[in-house]
Amino acid sequence: MYDKHDSVIVIGIGRSGLATAQVLRKRGVAVVAYDDKPQALSGARQALKKIGVPLIGAAELEAAAKAAKKAIISPGVPQTNRAVRVLQDAGVVVISEIELASELAASPIIAVTGSKGKSTTTALIGHILTTAGILNRVGGNIGNPLVLETVAAPADAWVVAEVSSFQLEGIVTFAPRVSVLLNISPDHLDRYPSMEEYAEAKYRIFANQTKKDFFVGNADDPFCAALRSGAGRSIPPKALWFGMEPTDRGLAMTLLGDAIVLREKRREVPIAHVQDLRIRGRHNVANAMAAALASLCAGADLEAVRSGLLTFDPLPHRLTIVHRARGVTWIDDSKATNPASAAAALDAVDAPVILIAGGKGKKTDFSHFADVASKKAKRVILIGESAQEIGDLISGPAVCYARDLETAVADAVAAARPGDVVLLSPACASFDMFESAEQRGERFTALARTSGDHDMAAP
Image 1 (tube, rainbow, N blue to C red):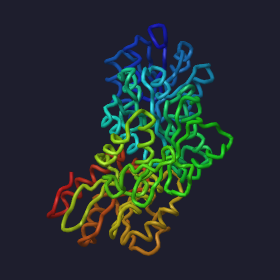
Image 2: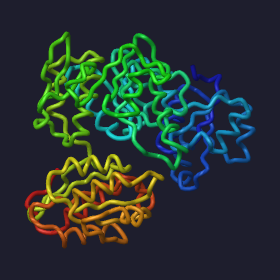
Image 3: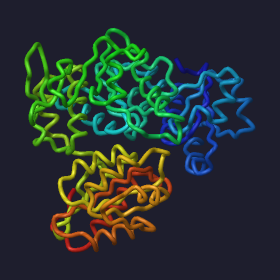
Image 4: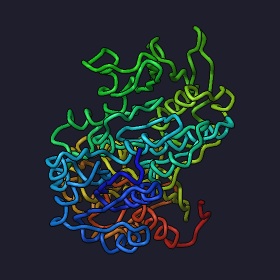
């Protein structure tokens, strides 16, 4: 189990790759690192040197493969990458960082995936478990590498993991005690040839689960709901479904009026009222249901679930109010990096909206997002590579194009009136203009807070 007798190659040396190298070196494993992106090399070279990990180039990869037992691939590196092919041809087993994390874990894992809502649901589960007095560590795609959390977690704790389709591509035996499938909507079609292949990557979250494990799924989502009828795949028999339709008697949790209710032994037990949640929007009601069911599977009591749902604050860059000025509310939803997430954000706002959207597209269809924006927004300000593609689909509200986020915010300041909401919900990735969605959101927040005299600076 990864000791001084082993040799491993780490492919991709971003945050996940560096964490993997650190964990393996502490166990005495001989590690070499490889990355074909020049921008990654400058920052990582010194960090690798400190832990005794050489950085190799393409010319040295084949020789390294002859000595390697396994290769650990970072999420940003696709299975079609040339380095992956070289290693596979040499007979090296290539796995993802979450596979390594599960191999080293002493604790049971709750794994959460979906096209939107993963981070919110993952963090909410951790919050509920903490409220219940249950030890837990939260990691994965949410920002901190999962391998660091699993090696630090004691056996009597739970590890709550946000996992992406990219991470699930490289699993072999990864089997969470509880798997949560929130939804599957168009995303990352710049990496996957079709929606079906993208869905297959998501379905891998439950591929290795057994009879003792739990599956939590969204009955309202077509790709998830197909699993209820079998769809040629075997989900764990302990399957718990949530959804908004109370007449569906197969749901373990649903919405009855304004109340989230748990169906237990032919009873409907109220858990929380939607109006009392601090996270907003219909999509977050679904996220709350998923988190509640997963937490109950981990042993949380109903009172802790209720308290956790009611005391959880939105994560940064996810429908977060960042400023109020002259009666105008500014909301940062920069983490809405696909059209479905941005459409859900628009649906959640009950006020006239000035929408700032656009960025680097992922070969997804903007039609539904544009339809929602056409109905909900009074003005649409578009930036980035996908601006024209989105703008061509908008009908009704005024559409304008800005060369950068600064110009977009200036336009919003000029157009906004008391009672309006300025919403940054891009429906696109950020990499054409920013290093990350977080950096984009932080810049928007800074610009909003300097937009003029303010009534209140939101936290």
